[in-house]
Image (cartoon, rainbow, N blue to C red; front, side, top):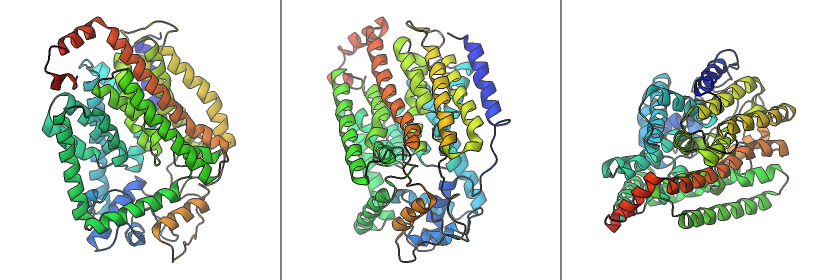
Length: 494
């Protein structure tokens, strides 16, 4: 195993190089591109328009950095419950609103990291916190979430905070965190595996009820909600096979399957993943927190809508495993870290950023190897597994990305592109993706996007191996023996 201080120094140097020597040139367009849609949705609401329609372009085209000379509409598909917040931010000048939202994102990343440290029962020292911070901050999903201004980071922080609050039996904190997690509903679904007691179910149901009420009030009542579901379905269909989707169906499409066959394949994978999660949780008798972490790991295989930044939810189980596990579980977790937390597809999308991507990947692998050095483990020096896997994957992914460059929206749209004036916003988004080249079939892109999904499977295996290892630990045997003496309603919460 590499000396912890040596690996830590390597992580720090790689992080510095990533943002200095290997920092790529700035790309055109506004900062935090997805915040463009959030801000414009709020501005559209303030003007009395429909934020789920093409009316949003009237606000987007006025945002600094947007190419107003062509149609590059970015739809808003978030829940209506968030519209009052976006409406409030849209009353500020764009620069001030962007600064405020950036502060929220940084706070969300800090919350996610703090929650992971608490869940791992990590020692409270600067060394541990700093290395865990490098592991989280250098991860591609976290960087993508901040760079795009994505609510996925806030939702993931809500999920992590809810896990801490439910385990600590803090109803008010659990209610608030669950409500925050619902801002990104696809990630909040993982909390279903955490609900084992009547009290937890009541807290989660209360948060869901408040979220539903705000959604109905902000979204135009029952008819507005039905219209939103229809719009969400249309947008999902428009984006199902594009290269920015990291789903089994989209990856199968890139390998040549027809859209219909790819959808069937994606559904089959989702069903298998759900059944596997249920079987593992029941058969291994996983505690509520571990069951939720396993659900987080398998979530990308289930959801029909998953982007690179959504993988930020996997930072939580990876940091936890880096801090507490050893042996084979640690080796598997280190491999999962480099598969999930490195921007492999970015090597094809952004050639100028290749050096930065590899530096950040090395920082992730080195930070993982530096954490929890008191558990060297047995059988193949597992702290080297992640570094070795990173080197091997980089040797394949880098030339693959260089040989098969991938397009990016809106950079590859024609300068004077005009959408069909009669098309609705979902049809416009589908046309933009097609014209920009995002629907092209290229197996190499499928391989690169498939690496994080493979990493999620490895992460699930690491969590199961860690659960088995902890059951064999003497201290935990005592904990379970004491649990049998507790009232039954509390045993399920351990």
